[in-house]
Amino acid sequence: MRRKMVAGNWKMHGSLAANEVLLGDLTAASARLTCDVVVCVPFPYLAQAQRRLAGSAIGLGAQDCSVHEQGAYTGEVSVAMLHEFSCGHVIVGHSERRAYHGETDSAVAAKAQRVLASGMTPIVCVGETLQQRERDETEAVVGMQLDAILHLLGDRMHDLILAYEPVWAIGTGRTASPQQAQDVHAFIRQRAQRHCQGAARTRILYGGSVKSANAVELFAQPDIDGGLIGGASLNAVEFLAIADAASAAT
Ligand code: PEP
Image 1 (cartoon, rainbow, N blue to C red):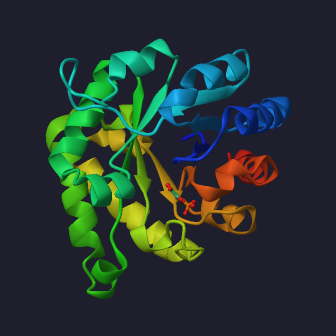
Image 2: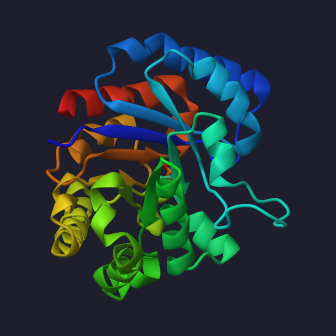
Image 3: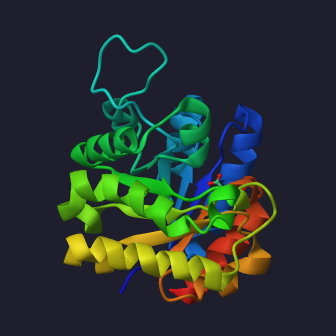
């Protein structure tokens, strides 16, 4: 049985004042949630979020990490630093990192390995662009992204979380239909299970314009274990409604 999970990706949004309100609203409601809930905040807000989430059931996460352990890497943040702020999860390979920062499949896999080695859980993102979907390349692209992870961490698949995020659905308001998403999730699980039986226990989140209006149907799919939520995670009422949908499906 895989417990449902909802992870919020705040991206480059927030302010000290706005975060106080958002985190306050989330923690006030967290007792009713029976799924796992994590918020992945920008680096400068880790200390604030750590303080505001202490004692609540909501976990803290980061949106990226360095592939390096430590050293002369200006602007980078290491997994050890994230661990010091009680991060339990780290998103790696988000499509925005892949597209705007040139992150390769092997760099994403190396980051996931670092996160695991530090005792945290990577949320590894995969997904195709619109052009790739229209060319019928979804399985080839997602398969290649996944293979890099399987190559390095094939025996640890039950310890990480995957997120299928079709690039064409991120921040566009255009969601994959529950069936489209389920088809890719099932493909990912089968491919991962060929390397590691433990992949039956790997949680695969769906991300891409998830909102309260589509969450119930998405989370009802057999291989969709929750959501990675961007825009809607900045609104407490909406994010909590999505978490309620995940709780009900748990
Ligand atoms: C994301 O950034 O991971 C995401 C899924 O964004 P949105 O929910 O806004 O589409």
